[in-house]
Image 1 (cartoon, rainbow, N blue to C red):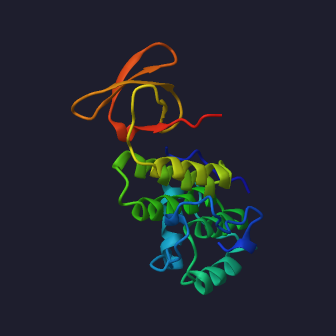
Image 2: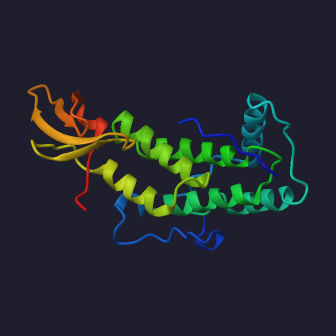
Length: 209
């Protein structure tokens, strides 16, 4: 059943990608909590129904998988997991497809919501980008290493100096920092030659290869 539309912007055994955590992950990704405790199954169903309505698709349950998915959700939603394990668990439901349409969008939207709430200490633009990374991972667009490296970059302290290589949050433009202005804004030259002035939280450091 083809059910996806473009996005708007778990336990280890549940998926081959296995978010088991590691020394390279920031501490914020290693803490455990029942991130989905307030999402009862009916909330998931209502979300899918809204997405189907907005996408002009039929809302309905997949007779082959819905009952098993509901049972797994009710039994597992209160288990404490790391954020990455939680995203893996959501991704596994996308793959099992309990609904007729918009499975990926449904579980990606849940991932977006919980990640946005999780990174409340991030500046708004960075929090929004972290939520987007999580949603695209659950939807199957990104692999796990991209999510981890992306969150690490977003969590870095914003402290640029002239000569630093930087890129925009989505990576669409790269460039070099010129002076950092007295009000904290960063003047930088894109590789295309265009000079720009940006808020520091809208840029991330580009890693040396």
